[in-house]
Amino acid sequence: MLALEPENINPGHREIYRCLALPLCHPSRDRLNEGFIFRFHQLVRVVARHEKLLIALEDGEIYTAKTRDGEQQKTKPEVGQINETFRQIRVLAGEFGMTPVNRA
Picture 1 (tube, one colour):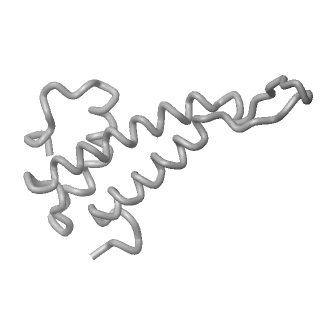
Picture 2 (cartoon, helix red, strand yellow):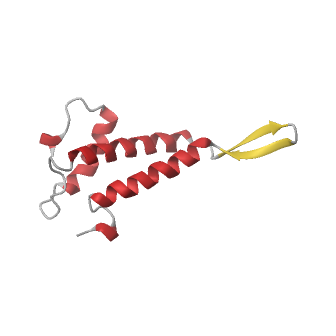
């Protein structure tokens, strides 16, 4: 697992990398190897981005905007970004057999 870990990975990504890599290195799965490492790095980056977006929305998903018609409740743009990163996580996790449907 550590042999495939990039040397120049930032500390936040390193924690996610190690958390996700451990079950994938198990001999029964053997999904984390040179052939999958690029996609695994993508998964780590998407998970890190998703976590940052969740932190940005801790104060709520809606804001109030004043318009000429009065006040309107609007959804923050980060909500759409969270939905997209979650879709990306599901696709990438599926490639590694990390979802019940994709386990082999």
